[in-house]
Image (cartoon, rainbow, N blue to C red):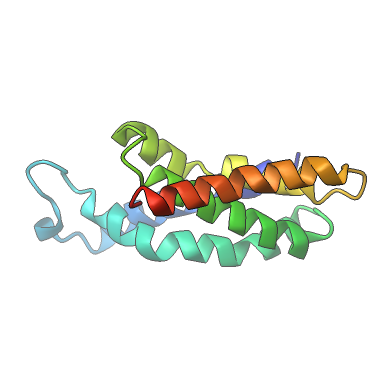
Length: 143
């Protein structure tokens, strides 16, 4: 599925941007004893994750996913639900980081599948219900 390419792009771009900033504008004060230089990635994550959602439509259009706007909107909603769930204390820290960073690998292909014209309405309702449940659980669990 070509939507997987779009799911891979946000973490690649964000890690690449954090590495570039670390090489060009390295500030040792961002490096801590416990976290090392992850301060750059945390800063990049706050801005970059929403930038990735905005850039999803052009990327989906570029890889010829049609209709790209529908997949981008549904995928962005699914991705927000994954991020909300990953922020809960139920998920271990390493699993939460992987889930948050690689959530697009789940969100955009599922969104492309759910928005396909031939998918049964009950399947759509169940999949959307799953992501709504993840979001609500994350909100109630304090994520």
